[in-house]
Image 1 (cartoon, rainbow, N blue to C red):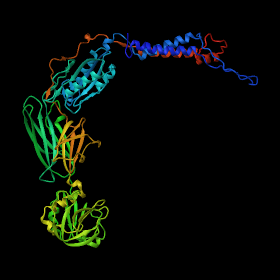
Image 2 (image 1 turned 120 degrees about the horizontal axis):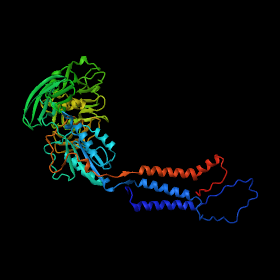
Image 3 (image 1 turned 180 degrees about the horizontal axis):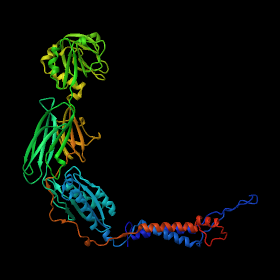
Image 4 (image 1 turned 90 degrees about the vertical axis):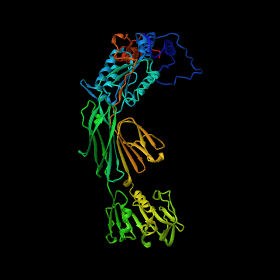
Length: 631
């Protein structure tokens, strides 16, 4: 027998303090007796306060003894008294279960995860009944499923709840976590037992020194496997309505494999490729497909393998619509070259006489024309009549020089040309919300007005002035369309991959404040940027969106990852230990002590407390009890 929570001196000290307090209360009796009288007429106030003497003799010794025994039992329950040897109880084991994606592979005896569950339960049965075990699920991360626990039913439920994940096994991290858990929380370190197939990446499992208390319970399974490693889709650099599809297939086995790959859109095949893969080799294929419709791109390997989860990858293509722009002009030839050069823009050309304020266009261009009713859409006004201009015209200048572009505004991004002489231009007066885009010495020549709708006003005609010969003109119109309809220039890159660390190649060095990394629940993920490389980590399957300016990258981290090699440590214990090697442990009795202590206090209250006296009066017993409780 031994105390688990307290040492013997600590127990005696606590019991001595409690018993002293109880005995003192039994010796003290300062309770005033209550007397009922007819009148206070014959009572006088005493000149001297009566002196009370401490009681020197116990009137209820059996009540005191019963209370002391009950408190001793309750204190022993708090100290967690155990029957048996204390040596065996202090062994705390860590059971690591392989929950990587490979554990979903099928064998003739069932799934690998089912075999691992059975082996883990057999390992628990081989341990002494009171040895504590912590269950850890290991894939890319080591996740504790329980604390150090001696309840075998709870541990078995945690084992049954273990399911294969989507990542490859990181054995180094799992072993390091187990060692730290035993170092910080174990009373006496037992074994670190690993149960699983142990399929890892080729560069993993390189720990210089394995734990001396490691035991490996291997789960045999299939070796040969071919799977889709990556699937990527991005906009074509040459055709605005086309997508480039990139697929990578890897042979994880030890024999040469010939596997066919089929790419489909909306259930219809759009491309095929057959790979002949050497052991451990990875090959890629590129396809092009033209569509502006939303739909699903599916990549599938036409094979039958024990591990089939990486034979299929799916990505959702967003719709690629055209931006409707309506130009009201009586001289459309001047503007056609610049507007038709902007990708993803569908332009409708109409004479000014056919102006309609309720047009379906998202952007309306008014060429030297001011309607009586302003358009409800975003609009570009080119040299409007001064009396009906949306921005007040201060004066009209001749031989005006454009001297400055307001580069702090996105509308002037990339525009550098200065001292451009204009034969004629309107010079505007700014309102409080107006933004100057280009200025002369006399005042603004191009003004933007944010809000709903957005408005931009030219004081001159860019296609009928010296600007038409400059690169500034198409860049300026591109900036205007991006400002009014930013989604028109958004480029998408879609990637199907595995959970873990993801590296994103940036086009240039980027300010981290302009980058957003969000999960499918719109929660921000932490990330780091080093030069032109962005890195983030996702430990669970799902979709992550990375927004960098006009570029949006979507990562569907749902593709399971199989390991390259099987981890086979040397010089460690293997298999399930024999149950006969286990010595008997200790047994808990604190529950019974707590119950007896509570019953003792209840019995004391019934026999010697108010409850006892009330019961006696209610039963008609008028004689004085043999013992009266002092408290």
